[in-house]
Length: 140
Image 1 (cartoon, rainbow, N blue to C red):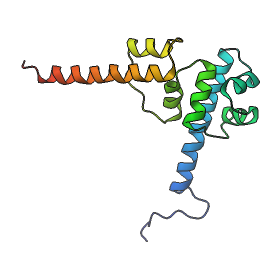
Image 2 (image 1 turned 90 degrees about the vertical axis):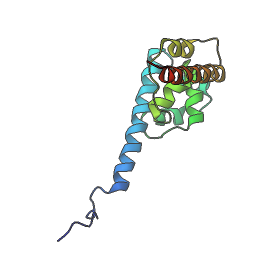
Image 3 (image 1 turned 60 degrees about the horizontal axis):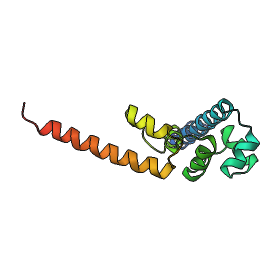
Image 4 (image 1 turned 45 degrees about the vertical axis):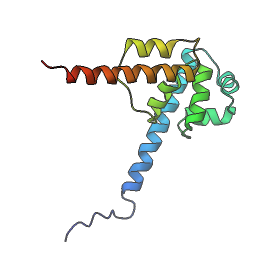
């Protein structure tokens, strides 16, 4: 008898696997947020006020029960004085970019707004792409 790909009742079908992946991602971002909050010595209540999200909702995020939206991640990043990009990468919203001292310096700068950081990084990336293309076009 050929295997039709159907899973027996109670088995692990594609939907179950996708649900587990989403759940794992939520737990990962929640654990990361908790570790960053504890490293910054900020209480859950303080971060909820800084980020403008409810205390119970933030607690659910940290415990992996909820996967926050990009907007909520940006608010949490602001409350933790982190780059939103760091949280977006951890949450799987953005792909991780190659490491760069310039990128790290821009992301770590507390004077710049998140929007200013993103604009600078976009310009930097465009220069890197342009220079990479120029290097490929040069005769050897």
